Structures are given as C-alpha cells and as structure tokens.
Length: 277
Image: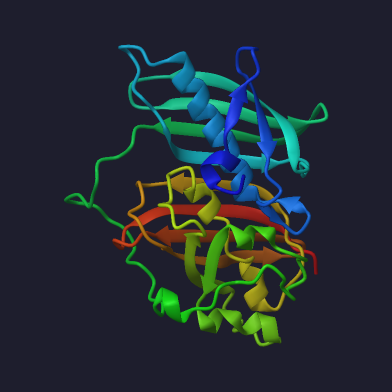
C-alpha cells in the first residue's frame, strides 16, 4: 500500500465526522510514523469528509490544504487508527477544519486545517516569491539509502520517497558538517507520480533535520509542524531546502521551502522539534 494516495486514504465509519485509517508502515522514520505523512492522512480525511457531505450554493469546493498546523501528542503505531473530523466553518473562499487522529482510545495528532480551492496556474502579475535554490542535476545526486548511520535507525520512508541531497549537504555523514545548519536536495516520489497538494505535506518534512549540519545528529522528534501549500506542483522532482532558525537547549526551530520543476515555490513549513544531544 506504499503509493501515497492509497497510504493516506480513510474510510467513513458510519458515525458522522468519524473515519478510519490504516497507517502504512512503509511511511516511517525509524520505528515512528513520519510526521508529514500523518499530516497528509489527516488532510485527506478532511477533504474526503467534505466531499461526502457535498458543497452547497453558499460554499465552494475546497480540497487544497492551504495551511495545516499539527501538534504531535503521541507517536501512533502502523496499523488501524481512528480519525475525527470537526468542520468549524464552511464558506465560499475557505473551510476551517479540526482533525484528530487517535489509536487505542488515546489522542496522537491534532491538526487545524484551512482548506481552499485549487489556485489558478501561475505565476501571476505582482507575485512575490523567493527564487529556487541552485542544485546539481537530479541525476548527479545520490539517492538517500534506507539504512543510514545518522542515528535514526532504518528509514523505510526512503523506499517510497526518492530523496537526493546536494553533495555539500552530506558532510554530516562523515563527521564533517558545514556548520551552516542547512540541508538541501531533490525530493520525488518513487513511483514518479506528480506531487499532489496533500503530498506536499510529506515533501515539506522529508529532508533530514537541519541540525545534522551543525553536528547534532540522532533522533529529533517533531513537536509541532505548520505547512503552507501555495500551488499545485508541476510534474517532476521538487527542490527542497531546510535550515535551522534557532536551536537552544533541547529545542530547535526549522524552516523548509520547496519549489516545483517550473521554479515556483509551491510550499513552505516551520516546525518545532526536540534535539536529543
């Protein structure tokens, strides 16, 4: 069930606002489910719940997660989970939803989502957006392996996401980080399917923690992650860069940006993560 659309699907439970999910073990970092994947599951549940209740003349069709803010309470295990979808407001321009994932009657992840309509293809006159980062060609960058010496254990996610770091970003693997606190590279689905807006929630959390480039390796669990989706990506791999904004004690703030094959910035994210020194 590794394909992203299948792996993020949910089914109605028969109870209004309640759905069931099957968390796919392939989308893991070490023993834990990938944070971006969990956001994608919950965003898809919100979109599916709205689609099944239907739009009205006073509301639009909102199936793009413009903003998703997730709080990670407890790491769920692969397998069955429950999803609760609470529609807070449904309007013409946007719909606000609260979604919670639980397992064994315990809350695991709670997200607040703003859903909107798919934006018209750009760019548009007056747009302001950062230029894409410079990277070597995709084919000249090595794919990240499933087994890695960076302290996180096996990375099953790397079997379904083709992540290729820029060679200067690889110094942490040999004990020679640059000290800049930034990692960059290419990100593409292993199936070569085009990234969807919901799939961008995965892409915005795929690079290794940027603190690795400061020499701080090991487990770095996400505590809170906010992702913004700006556009529907063009076919092809995404350029991604992630950097440390602030690290102090056992807390780190990171920012990530991704651009599609047309050079448009299609998403950005910020997260608070723990640092296990």
